[in-house]
Image 1 (cartoon, one colour):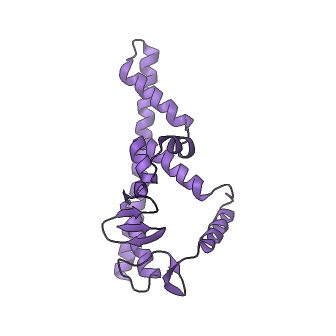
Image 2: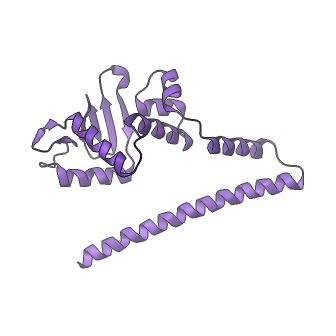
Image 3: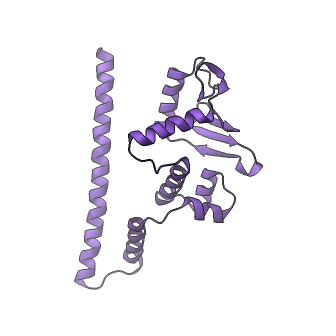
Length: 194
């Protein structure tokens, strides 16, 4: 669990973020994906002197009891943007990308609003959700496939092609996951023998 109180991030062990910020409406519990939990634990072990579950994740290097200065975070973010040649990226654009991808992966509008701590639908839609043409096209095609079954050979061939493309994308995802699993298991073997 990571608690976010007045922008102070504190971790714990159940892979959730408990956010209790400035207003009662912004209080929420947000799940953290398992791979990110692992990264948080590694971060605590490496950078948090007392390794206490109640420690701050991002604290001043010379004063672990103090919050990391926002200008330090901004400076490091600017450096990272330059390094990847993406000076157009902002903290806001990262939030908007997360909201959009959250919806594309199946999150509802209400879940997305809760994820971001929004109570105003207009703000959530206007500021944080983007139209993704490819996704929109895919949704329209899936709806047509589901509710307008093809009656002629050309329509059936198009549906088969669409399903084959989906299968190819799933195979690529599985192949990528298998490569990553092999890498991780190889690292474990090296660590066990080294």
